[in-house]
Amino acid sequence: MPFIQLPEGPLHYQLDGPHGAPVLLLSNSLGTDLRMWDPQMPALTRHFQVLRYDTRGHGQSLVTPGTYSMEQNGRDVLALLDALQLTEVSFCGLSMGGLIGQWLAINAPERLQRVVLCCTAAKIGHPDIWNPRIEMVLRDGQPAMLALREASIARWFTAEFAQAHPEQVQPVVDMLAQTSPQGYAANCAAVRDADFRDQVGSISLPLLVVSGTADAVCPPADGRFIADQIAGAEFVEFAAAHLASIEAGDAFIERVLTFMQA
Image (tube, rainbow, N blue to C red; front, side):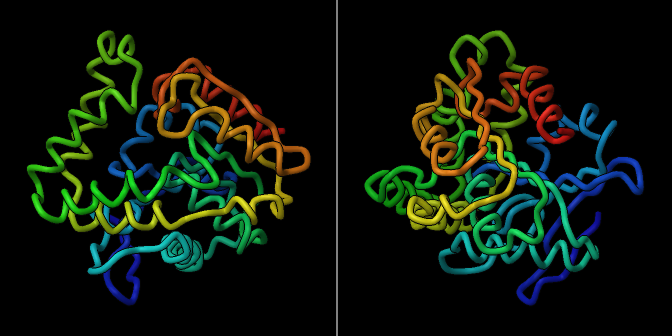
């Protein structure tokens, strides 16, 4: 298993695809790990060397005490790029991964080429949503993660998709149940505190914003807000809920590849 060593511990990553191809970095959502991108890998690795990693607090990466910040998560990405001697990459992040992408595009645009922000917002939710969840997870531990797994099916997928494709839904929600409660709560705080509404307009990179029509976590209005702030930004909406990368399937991949190869 490949890791880089951060000052506080290991960051797990995976690099697939043809050596010498352009590098595309994928960033996972809150409560998942790099495996959330497994369905997209066959198509993406035909064109890119794909770099995935487990965000701090998730998967096999380090779990450090205290709350995290989007800056901390963004600097983890920069440390990963430095360790792999990657000067520039293209980026695709979903939900929390989209917040990390916004931080990078605002604070380290020279490291990015083209950016896809999926099912995300310049500000996701409100403290009244995040604080009780943080409290519950820290209090109840793994049983709370199991409860969140069941609740997340309805947030992450439409009822029709969840019923028709349990083989695609179950592996993703199982990642949530396996996530460290401490790491999950710390990243909930990072999402709670991230607010790029006044900064996102400074992004000048080629940008595609993806939304799901049925996404109750980050509705299409949130995606349109980002796209409207950035000159030349593209916006696309799929008939999907929060994990549109999975639910929209081939249509999602086709649109991302069209944008990345423009």
